[in-house]
Length: 341
Image 1 (cartoon, helix red, strand yellow):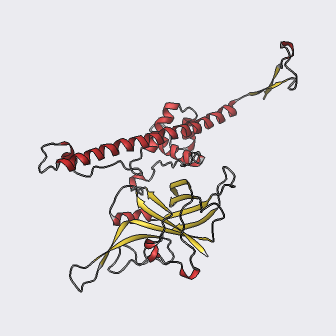
Image 2 (cartoon, rainbow, N blue to C red):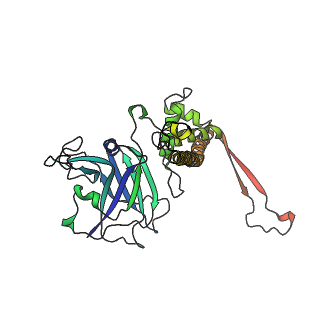
Image 3 (cartoon, rainbow, N blue to C red):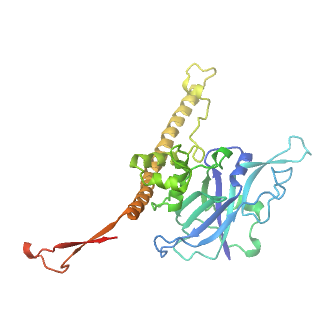
């Protein structure tokens, strides 16, 4: 009997329901189960995927429930809007929530339930990478013939995980630098770091838009420059939009604002300022962590250049590795061998 992983998807910041549809376009979610006996550093084998397929009828919901593609495993939720006049048809409106469903066979062969690693891709770009969510809730066993259809996804419980989706890039943002840092403290993939750093560097007028130009810059990159690049990547206002006030800014900071609700304005101002501080603190912490990975990338390029340019190599080794150190005369001495081209 299969069980279901139920993933609730939502935007990072509130948006209109119709706009959220673009967040789902080309979306694919891969789930892997990581057990305790999985070797460190080994990528777990995926146990399932969910993919968004557009509405069968295309476009916004019609005056009937949305025409979901029967093969889709990610569906956007909708709300029913009762007709204002008795006898007229109800209408339906998309909301900024979706559900992804992944079916897995049988019971998890581990303590309690599955420990999941989630990777969300939009097209070829990874937009969310979560490592690792422990003991996530799964649905009870379901009959194969009773697997729910797309129209039933919104009512499924329990919810395994909630996942915040970043905004899709606008046309001018197609070359955004993004870097998801694993939540378990492990380093991100080399390719992810390089692609993010490359995106920032080629936008610099002093760096040619070529791999050779990026390599030349990385070979001389300083720690302050690495930190600057990391902050450029992590303070991405498209992927991680900064907070906005709940009320008009003028009302928050103008005591004689017309019809000002003092209590509501003061509360909204305190919330807004706290959110601004929190946003900067989180983004700065991520940027400081990313600085080490950017500088490590640069160090790798610098080491390769030094190795390629070297004309000799040296090794130090003890002459008598097992000799006792009873007195100063018997202390281990070292010899040096130089290998020249």
